[in-house]
Length: 374
Image (cartoon, rainbow, N blue to C red; front, side):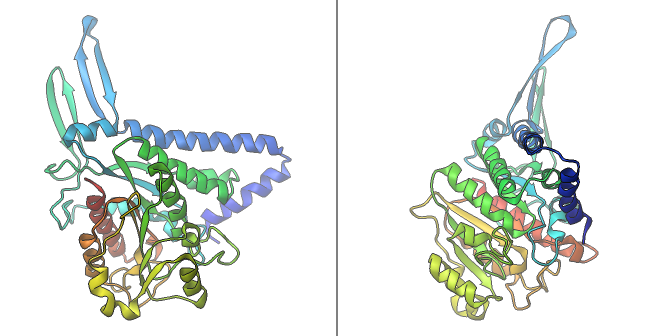
């Protein structure tokens, strides 16, 4: 059993043995949750902001700080900007729990010097800000030269392990993830692009996006598995049950599906496309039109939708998957207002030495960021 699991399991018996009252435990858990949400809220508001300095008497400088949202609007009136939010959760995986370590590996690959930050459609994904000192404006960018008003920002990770260490159960943890997403969206025009973590995180994220936008969203789900078991191995929050909770969407790339998976798709009215018929369905899937009559489109990409030749660093290796070009064609040609998304199930513990799958995940993030940003 890995340390990340052992810590979460054994803290509660220790607290019970110490006869900590339920009221005290609840108070402690609430304080940790409040601190975690405050962390996300303040990062969304203040991290790497636009700072103005003003001269004043007595050699003092006054300054004001504006939010990410105000910064993005000042840079070009963007209606939506992708914002990375890491959710390093892996304990709902049914096999390996390495996806908990994925968010920092994806970030490292996004800004790796071996590639550039321009998407295939020519959008420059960079993080940029300005500082004005005594009327002189200085511009800074962590990516390439900013040639587009679309900016990729980052509010860091939800502190999943710290929350679990104090005994918070999964029901409450899912709510914390959802509230974190809403805090990002409070800073208009920021839109969440979530880095998993296992696929269980998609349910609270999609729910939060839908609630924040005030209505349902279409879901495009690319995966080797439908993830729609009612409660896989008795766990309603299993990564194999996330889309039973979501209950609607388009699934593409499936090649490992059981009778229950097909029955669940029929029950929920889900359009499901399997790899065995992909050559027949290719034209339709590469020209999707989604989002009509709803609040937008949410895209969830499980890295194992790709054939392991392109992405070996996943927990569940299923040969016969999509090529990377197949996925890009689906994303680039999709017609619809993409309002949020996630990239999940990278397992760095199974990746190649040079982080090949992390680089694949990073490119998916860049292409999704360009799709979300407007």
